[in-house]
Length: 78
Image (cartoon, rainbow, N blue to C red; front, side):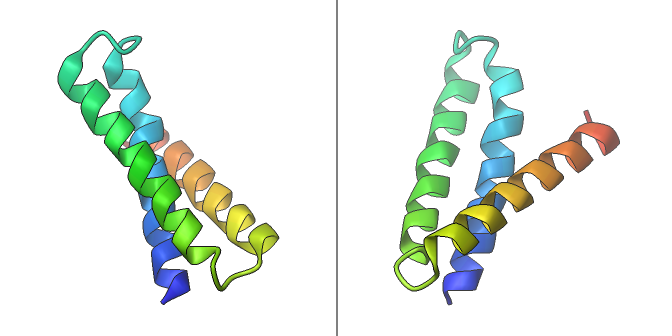
């Protein structure tokens, strides 16, 4: 179950990383709220996953999913 939480945390990390573009410096209310929400959910899920997974492993996987996903999304969509 921790791995599922970790993957979900990584997906929300992609969401907030991409969402930063649409906040326009946190001047647009809806994208800002969605981006901050994704940040909170991502970190919350990461924290839950770290209860049973080693910290280094969980963090590396989380960052890897977020970085790779953001790059791919940026290339393919944005």
